[in-house]
Image (cartoon, rainbow, N blue to C red; front, side):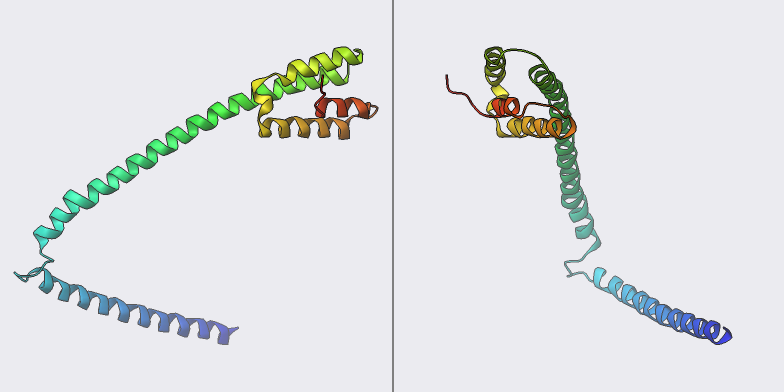
Length: 160
């Protein structure tokens, strides 16, 4: 145990010596860079670097931050609208499916309800059809005693 502790102490001392030697080299480099900035014909003068920072870099970063903020706000607003629409469609789809599947209507009345439901504008969109199919699959898996032909009637388009 003592040999392990002595090994860690030696390792820590070596790391400390290495780190401080590199730190001293960096200090020497920074002291040499002041000579470059004080040269009269150098492009790295203090005034030039200050003007570059003040008139180009800070406004550019401010503009980028402003654009990212607006993009985040617009994205969040669109997400909230889609979330409200999805909740409304979930309720509408659940009501339709429970009405059609668990009711004792005749086939003609069921066909009429399905036709009215498919006239909805959103039904033409693929993501909405996928939503309905997922709900039908979950109902079929979770509830026993459902007529499978009735579920097929809902999913297949009937030609009148």
